[in-house]
Structure formats: structure tokens, C-alpha cells
Image 1 (cartoon, chains in turn orange, cyan, brown, red):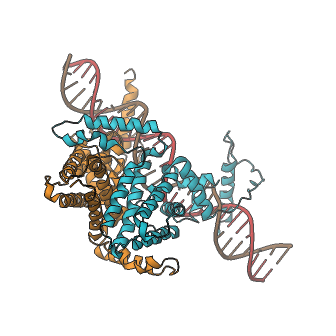
Image 2 (image 1 turned 180 degrees about the vertical axis):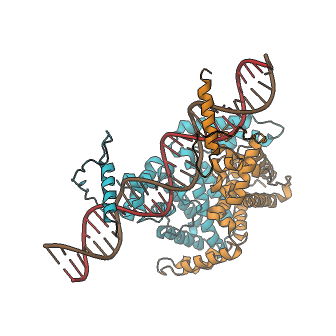
Image 3 (image 1 turned 135 degrees about the vertical axis):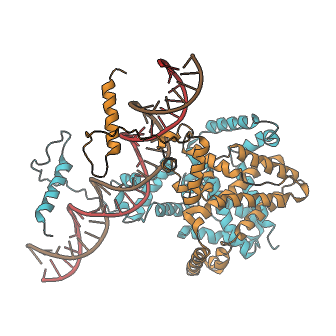
Length: 256
Length: 256
DNA sequence: GTTCGTCAACGAACACCGTTCCATTCGAAA
DNA sequence: TTTCGAATGGAACGGTGTTCGTTGACGAAC
């Protein structure tokens, strides 16, 4: 307030630095009077931040989603994000919730609750695959976003329709996302989301070779099952097995 | 080779910097000829590195296990570790394998294979809990360390004794560690391993309150099951439910 | 006994990360 | 038109994993 001159100087210096070209001239040269013609860009919103983060997630995986890179994608600095998002963890939750929005859950039908549950899990995996890295953000966090809660509600409805006891149903809606998320995470780890079919086949072949080359006296069963251990990595067989086991296990607890 | 003088100068500067006291004297002062009397300490080994990392893991959780801190604990710099360990990820794998060493798997008994499988999973969780953070290191990596492979071999033996078909057994030894690791990871996230009983109770109470306060027209079942949804977080009930479901599911596939 | 080559050790630096401080700027209410 | 609170974003803080290049101890060769 009192030191207008100093403030003005500070501004001048700022502009000088901003406009110093590659020749690195003295900052005390006359400053171009043109203001930077401030780009009238739309204001930052939580929505736009999640959009940018999601784009980054899809294109480059979870590791690339940093506050800095999101800010950069929005032509701003990292500090600006904190006015709309509490921290990185909250941003992760928002990403998860946006993905949850796209998951589909059938209306409960007591006759077909097991297949409905499987379809739900397939839909969850499908969405998580289409946003590689979202599993990494989801793992180890209780899903409390609105969309995620709706998913919970719908799965509970299916389980109750199937006669699964309340307590079992409650724990099941913990177990089910845990399994799907862990599966998706396993796939997304180390950029596996960008692998081609050939990459996977090569990896599987190499892994099988590793198993088969183990010392036979110590690992007889592992060697014998080398093919079985490495199969099903390509398609969904492995995942289908998991949901089969879980749904059958839940069915054994159902009251009818 | 050709510029001996320059090299010597570089050395002098280095020493000058090294020995410049808090007064920050000129670097061109005469250099103390005393050598630092290099402490004759035992050489760095992979073993010692894993020891130090494990200690850090137990005392302060996974987040504290950084190359810097491990190096510091060994009175050296981070670069020294890279002569013995390829990178952080490999160190993580070594930690996982050391933990796997302590897991116990019963000798296969066809009569009690289901309970044996459950005991195996309980042992896995117990070990992962005693090394908080090891789950974080284990998740999303195929366990190829020697000890981890032995665990796989033993679980395969139990499953085969129970009459589980080969392919199912092979996938089961993927599913089982996935579930146990994910459970342990959920617990270890955000330092939950250091929570007191009161902390957990407080958190559960708060979470239940959150569920109960949801809009009743949108989340009727979630509200009705608020208590069930938040129970079992204290002891092992939740985990026991999971292994019950999985083992029952596997049993439904067994051939006898 | 002296020189030389090798290689583990490690200080310093690089390029990142999440987060915070605070000067500046802007838009809407007064 | 003035004022004032909210939004903005540059700079910095204290971390992270990793790499580079110098150092110095030690064993082998002369």
C-alpha cells in the first residue's frame, strides 16, 4: 500500500524476466508496454481438473497423474488445484468415482442373482480396464463417492434378492470390489495395459520356461503345472475362475 | 590424462569444500593433510541391505523404506545400494521373499484340506501383518523369489490333495495370495497398522454415522445395513468371511 | 617394493514428487 | 467506483528414485 514504487519495480522485473528472450538481455532494458493480453480462459473447476486428470490417466497411466502434470495440462501451476481439490488422495477418489459412474448393475432378479453378480463384476472390470490406472487409485480406499455408493447399493440389492444373509452381503460388497480391483491392478501394473497380444504371449512363454526350469526335487508340482499356472493370462479365463469361486462361495451361504 | 593440473585443482576444491567449517572460509586456504581416517566397516551386501530395509519397514511402515533411509541406516549414501540391488522394486521383491520365508503351510492331508488351506491363509496374513507394509510391496508382483515359490508349491500340494482339478488349483494359487495380500494392504494403507483399538472404533463409528446419514430414498439398503457394513473391522471376522467364501467356492469345484 | 588396473563406495546432482506460502489479480457486491 | 474476498499461480520446501563421475583401497603384475 505504501510503497507503490517498489511494487511497480517488482512488476517491471517480473515482466523483464518473463520477456527475456533466448539472448538473455539485461532485465533493465525498456519493457514492452503491451500487457500479455491475458488469455481469457475459463475458470478452473473441480470438473475440469478431474477431466484433465482422467485424460492423463488414460493416456499415460496412474504414475503420470501428478498434481504438477494435471496443472500443466490446464496451463496453470500446481497450487491452483488446491483451491478445488483437497489433495492428491481426494483427486484419486474423484477419479475412482468418475469410473464408478460407468459401471452397470442389473435390476435384482432372485432367479438369476448369481449370473447378475457375475455380470456386475464383469462390468466393473471392463470399466477399470478402460481407465488403466484407476484400479491403482481405488485400491486401499473405501469408496465413499456418490457413484461408488450407488454401486454398493445395487450390489447389496442383488445379494439380498439371492437370499444372502445381511452380514454376508455386507462383507461381500467389500470382497467383490477388492477382488476386481486387485485383478485390474495386477493387469495395470508396470504398464501392462499397453501390452500387445504378442507381448503377453512372449511373457507367458518366458514365465512357463522359468517354471519348467526349476529344480525338480524341490518344485515337482509347480513344474508339472507350469502350463496351467501360466494359462488364462490372455483372456478372461483367470478372472472368470475367480468370480466363479466367489459367487459359488456366496451361494453356499445363501438361505435358499 | 592430459590435464593433470586441472584434476589436481578439482581435488583441492573438493577437499576445501569438504573441510570448510561453519565459518565458510575461502576454499583456497591450505588443506589439512589429515585424511578422514576411513572407518573400516564391514562391506555392503545384499543381505545387510535387506536387513536394514526390513527393520525400517517394521518400525516405520512401507513409506519409510526409501533408498535414502536404508542407505542412511547403513551409514552410506543411496548410490552405494545400487551395486547390490537393481532398484527399489527389486528391493521390494526381496522384502516380500524374506517375509514369505516365515509363512507356514501344513503337510497335505486329504481329509482336512479345506481347514489346511484356511490355516495357510491365516499364516500368510499373520506374517504380512507382522511386517506392516510388505503387502504394499507384494501387491501386483508375481512372486518369483525362492521362498515365495516354495509357498506356491505347498499350496498346490494341499489343493491337489483336496481333489481340486489342476487348472483350478493353478488359478487358485493366484487368487489366494491376491486376496490375502489385498486384505493386508487395505489394513496397512495410511499407517492403519499403528492404529489403536480406540482409533478403529472411532473410525467405525464415524463411518457408520456417515452411512446412516445418507439420503434414505437413494440408499435404503446401505442405511439398513450400516452396522453390518462397518462391523468386523476390528478382529478377523471380515477376513474369515473371505477365506470361507473362497474355500467353499473351491470346494464346489473339487472332484470328490 | 613399486606400479597399475579394477571396482566397490559414495558425494553430488538431476528430475521428479506433493504441498504450502503469499503476492498478485479478478469479479462481484456495496 | 470502491472494496474485499476468493481464485490464481510462481517460488520454494522437503522429500523421492536414480545416475554420474571421482575416489581410494586392494590385489596382481612387474
